[in-house]
Image 1 (cartoon, rainbow, N blue to C red):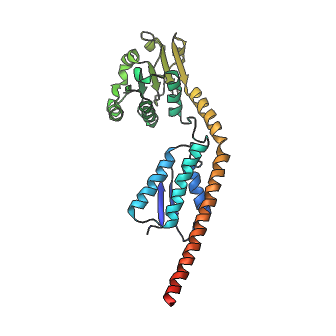
Image 2: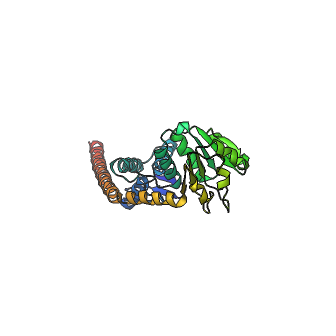
Image 3: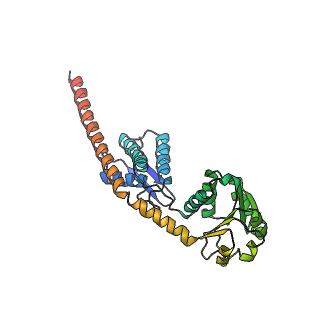
Length: 281
């Protein structure tokens, strides 16, 4: 019988224990975790999958105690309820998702465009992930280290190129998303001039990767990290308004969990009485 369950995420490791009765404070915390209320990015969806995986893994290792089984089933149910009945997970709040959401609204036919991403890091990998989910198929990944670009590009069927070929990249691209750790700009107006037409640039770097002069070119739109951040904050503010609704759902499910435990306790007591009575007879 498994009486403990460990939940590991990228930012936390938590252990839940069954000590004979369901701890209401522990259950409430787990429900808040599953709802995304304890996440750095309010309402993020990945945590619900992590809760489910922890539950499935513990169940596969051996029979979970009835309390632990019911508490985690209820937490997963809470996670689904808050994401379908409230707006806690609506609107992108990560810079990478905000960028791809903005791009998708401006360019609905992403599969027909060439999108170049500059830099290899967690943010650009997240961007690649979101782009492929939105149907983008013509992807270029540029980086100073070609080996690093090739390793990441293989995961998303992208073309890896060295950053030294940036003018070739610009000639091919409809959209350029740059997010490097370079200490100075890597794309200047003179790099773009020979090739510009209707192009979109997203500069997610600080300090900036793309000179502000690029935005002066006809047909070119340049979005900076400040603009991405404003969008993210607006969405986060909208999500915050749903916290009260999420907490109401959590309290409803806690009350239901308590009723389940009370019914189970009564049934257990009745069963013991029956067993004793049969033994006497």
